Each structure stands twice: as C-alpha cells, then as structure tokens.
Amino acid sequence: MIMLDRVTHRLRSSRRLAISLQQHLDGAADWLAQAQDVSADDGVPAYYNAKTKRWAASYPETTGYIIPTLYRYAKLSGRAEFAERATRMAHWESSIQLPDGAVRAGTMDADKIVPTIFNTGQVLFGWAAAWEETGAERFRQSLVQAADWLLSAQDNDGAWRNFASPYALDGVNTYNTRVAFGLARTAQALDDERYAQAAKTNVDWALTQVRANGWLDNNDLQDNHRPLTHTIAYAIRGILEVGMLTDTPRFVSMAEKMADSVASAQRRDGALPGRLDMHWRAATRWSCLTGNAQMAIVWQRLAALDGKPKWRDHARRCMDFTRATQNLAASDIACRGGIAGSWPRSGEYMRWRYPNWAAKFFMDALMPEVYD
Image 1 (cartoon, rainbow, N blue to C red):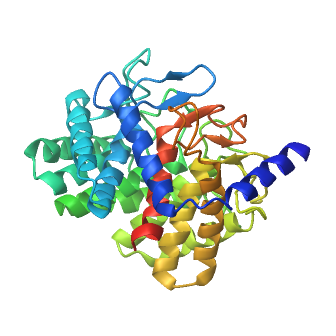
Image 2: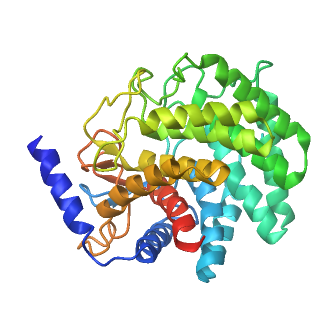
C-alpha cells in the first residue's frame, strides 16, 4: 500500500499543474511523430524501453490503426503535417503487405514472417482512412485484399481459428471482435455488405462465449482467467461498434452491460486495475494505461448514444488518472509525451516501456474532450 499511496499522491499533485487537455494531446502526437522519425522506415516503432533506452522495430499492426488517429488529429488541430505522416504510414503498410493480402505478426525484426488475423484486422482501419482521405487506388486495393483474406480465413460460425498470432495464446480469441470492427469499417468505406455480414457473424460467435454476468471467455493474450483491461476493451468496443455500424441493438446492449461491469471495478483514483477476474474484480494492483484510455473511449461512445452522465464521469475520471501519468517535461526526450504500458511503470504489462498504441488510444480519448 505504501507504493500505491506514493503514486496516488504524485498523481494528485500533478493534477494541480496548469496543463491543458490540448497540451496533453499535442504531447502524445509529438511523441508519435518522434517515434516515426527514429524508425528505419515510415512505420512506428512498437515501443520505447525506458530501461534500455532503445526503440523497438516498427510494428505493422499498431501503425495501421494509428493512421486514422493522425488524420483526425491533423484535421482538428490544423497541424497538416500529421496527415502527411499518416499517408506515409499507409504507403509503408501497402509496401509490406503479404502476397495473400494479410499483415504479418509481430514487429519488422520478428524471427518469422507469418500472416495473422488480428494484425490484419487492425491495418484495415488505416487503409480505410487513407482511401477516404486521399482516394489513392493503392489503398483501396490493399483494403480489399486484406478484407477478402480475412473472409477466406473465417470459419462458418464466425470465429477465426487459424492464423493466430504466434506471440499470444493458442486458440480462438474473443477480442477478435476488434477485427470484426475493422471489417464493419471496411464495409462502410467500400459500401460492400459482405464485410458487414462477416463482422456480425463474428460478434454472434463471440457472444456464445459470454457468461451470465457478461464475462467473455478466451479474451487475453496470455491469461484467460484474468485478462488485461486492454483486451477486455478491445472486445467490448468491437461488439459496440459493430452493433452501431450494422444497426444491431442486441450487440450494443451487450456492450453496455460489459462496460457497466468494468466500471464497477474502477478505483477511487479513477484508474482501472490492469487485469480483472471473471467476477469483474481487480486481479492486479497496477493499472494498464492503454486499457484506461480504451475504456474511456467506450464510455464516451455510450454517452453519445444514450446521454447518461455516468458514462462521461467514468471516462473523465479514468482519463484524469492517465493524463497525470504523462510527463511533458521528461529529461529523456523519448519518454516525453508518451504513455507508459503500466502504472507504476514496473507493472506487468509492457514493463518500463512506452507502447505506441497507448499514445494512440490516449489521443483518441482526448480528442472528443478537446474539440467536440
């Protein structure tokens, strides 16, 4: 408790600083720009390790869904150079797309190049945004090839059982509803109902894995008995967004039930425990900052749907905590503006590292508060 009390005191103290939401948002954007600039290509390194002072290799999966974040930020902030960065990322993604249309597992220095379902689903977001923003045929072709590959790999019941990541648990994953979300987004961008139907079929399968209390089985990278809030939020948002994009109210209702259960685990300081057990109870003392930001987005989306104040309150408190962990004056410039994997940074998830996806979801959660 002493360590947590010290952390809480530091966070409360930092909140007294006159740092605007815009400054927090710009800091995360600048961190992502720095990350792209230090890469060996136009992708974004997976993370910066504050212990070893080294950047990882570029990560195709997460670079893919950073693209729409930067396009939106460029439009809202007036910083047009971020749209140019996003387009460079999209061209890079197309240049490394596998011949069958899939996206590889892991980072660019991975010891083997294999196609994987989840990573391919995440890059759909980037190609869809790049196609809509630029009209470049290259991006439409990459989007179609990747989405068609996902359809060809999908089982009849909607699950994906083949082409799992070699860096996660074997077997079927319910957080693949985030892939279904990517397909529903592709259907929207291309006006092709095939992709929307495949998305609905996957979510229908995922809901067969739901327990009476709304708990989703098979929903973690390493420990299905106590999944990360990161993967829990992936799954919930996938269910919610597919429900919204395909006008399927029962999906939205289930996502709302799950989001309410996650909210029941929110701590007094606003953070979520980094892992939850099957009774929606805290399974760790550290917090997963990525999961915090992702759940804030889910709650924001629900607030926009039904107007209930409780959703915005959960989101605000979670982001207050997460913002307070961001150091905009760090002596190590590679940490400045980034979002750590865990808080404290010694926590189990991405220990001592600043993953690019944490900054991405942090920006996504802040933009509605800054600009809407």
